[in-house]
Length: 438
Image 1 (cartoon, helix red, strand yellow):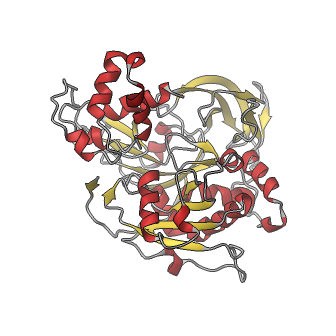
Image 2: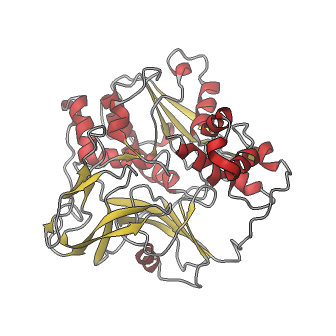
């Protein structure tokens, strides 16, 4: 672990809707399964929120469906790079026609009259994914349906960002906890949860004391609820195993919550906002909240963008550049990715975009490992990143089974990268080892 500078800063500004792009590029594979079927053809007219692609994998019947973020005409199809360097087929839609959701008020629906199984199907239909593991999103409906028998069935909600530079989840907690709370109640009902834990940044007031009660009944239907403060200066406090350890330490004497483990469902603020909008308002996931910042921009802030908007469009919404960015970093400066190009589209698991100069992030050339041992000393999982890196370089197919299996303990916090004297891509190498086993 490393200690970050303590801050009790709250994000005081509001999210604003961006202008609408004339053309959106909507990737159809936002979960990385690579098995989606297009439901539209070139020249088709589509409505805002219309399903344009769905999974055709018989093993993933509840994968999140893909919707058109704007009304318009399908002008073609292409293969586009995603923020993590992978590629996806995409639908190109030119803006034209009337809106179904934007600018219109939605009447809340009484979700408690719907059966849990129907809610799970609605979660899939409206395209809700779980972005707790930001670089590996999952269909939330699939996670509910395939929960492990080892799970304690407690729902854990993280109300802050595991990468402190990302800030989107923290912003939504600060400005929309009432919606997050409703989303948690809906999810708990759908999964028949035995309890709910809200993990919040202890440098800020507990949301338990600041949430506005908009209902005159128990929204959680008597499900036990706990609020646990987390020291977010202890990075990586927000990652799965570390967060569970923190919760267990504080609730170890509670009969229900002391059984929480890695098989339980963990979600974040963004996921619950989308879930609330999908089930109570019947709005599909067609927009994403994105924190846009960096020393190259004239203005920073939180934008609500249509999915399929490009990074170029996003920068224009902030007034353009003060200076040309040297790097564009997506999803946080600690755990994020370097955008391969400016045409990368915004997807459901993009939460922040940083436009950084070479002064802030100079280029470094990787060198030979000097065996300093820094990566081992900071690894919260007790791994030897240098050893795993060198083994992978030599021959991944001849690695000892124990070493290969140990790579699965990596949380992806990238502390090893941060302290490496030789600037080696240690975390990325370990991620490759993990993927080779799947």
